[in-house]
Length: 155
Ligand code: SF4
Picture (tube, protein in one colour):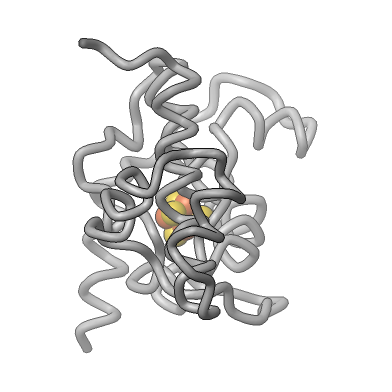
């Protein structure tokens, strides 16, 4: 059965919230109560990968400073440059719980503002609206940017 938009976003949010509560010592029962789901759902969320806790914000940030710690690395099944509203909502749901959301959003609204795809919990269109910039400028490619960050992270 195909998941609806809302079900898919809720699954990501529940998966990350379950991990966060579990790390803080919450019981399976408490997590199930909080999320209003069955205990078997909590076990299912906890069996999946989850990003670590949020980190403090840096004022001037480079992609290589945070990208390798981003939650997106644990969701390779998502298309981060898709123009589908479902895919964008799923990516944004991951960003919402990302440990480096603040750094990524700062970068996306400054040095990475012309890059394609979802960054820092915002689509390119949302970033443009936020910045009040004109449409139509040349886009960067997420794959190129990511490859650069990986290279710098590995150096
Ligand atoms: S905020 Fe989103 S795009 Fe940025 S590193 Fe985290 S998960 Fe990836």
